[in-house]
Each structure stands twice: as C-alpha cells, then as structure tokens.
Length: 148
Image 1 (tube, rainbow, N blue to C red):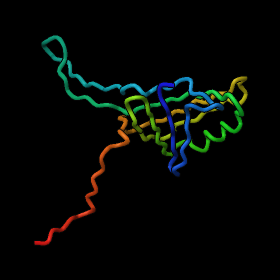
Image 2 (spheres, rainbow, N blue to C red; image 1 turned 180 degrees about the vertical axis):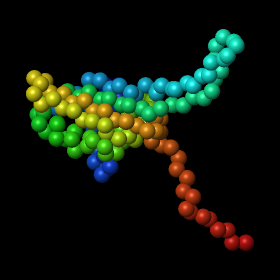
Image 3 (cartoon, one colour; image 1 turned 90 degrees about the vertical axis):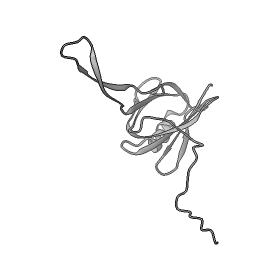
C-alpha cells in the first residue's frame, strides 16, 4: 500500500485504518488540496471583473471502509474513535509526507444490514491544511537569564 492512515480521538486512543486484515479503506476523499472561494467584482464599463479577495474554506474528509472480518468488532472500534461532534486527528503518511490534520466528526454511518458491511466517516476540518508532524515547536515559557 502506498500510504498509511491512522486516527486518534481526543482521549489519545489511536486506531490504524490501513494495513489491517479485518477492514479495508476503499476510498478517501478530501486529501487533495482544498478549493478556494474567489470574490470578484464585475466592472461597470469594461469586460471582466476586478479581483476582490480569496480564502480557503473548510476541508471535508470522507473515508469509506469495508469490514472484511468480524464486522461487529470493527463497528464498535470505529464508534470508539469516531464519535459525532468530537475532535479527531488524522495522520497520513506516504513515501514523502508525514502529516496530520485535526477536525470534528460530522458522522460515522454504518449499514449493519448490508451483505458486505461498510462505514462512511465524514470529518470537517476548520483549519484546512495538513501540518507536518516534525514541525519545530518554540517554547516561549523558558527564559534564559545571563549573569554579567
């Protein structure tokens, strides 16, 4: 597999979503760069428009997972991590990136009556950019005092 995907809830419990025998991620939407809202004002006497402003909105990540073995345990494991309205952090790793993004669970829908059970998880991320796990952190609370 070309990437790994893990999730952690606000209690620090971590669940690997890829590379498992009991469930398989079949589709992940929202990992591409987010779209931008471009605001233009039409010109009164000329063709075209005048650029006013632009912004990037929220990111919506939707993960589809099929249960291969023991769907009841898989379902409860997903419900433990992906609780509606709770904070969740997704970790995405591939050959060149090791990043994470934080969001809120919009929904975790499982169809228990399907022949091949699946889950669809929707996560809304207010800050739309992935962050590098190895970002440097500056501690401003530590103040060095030099004696002269």
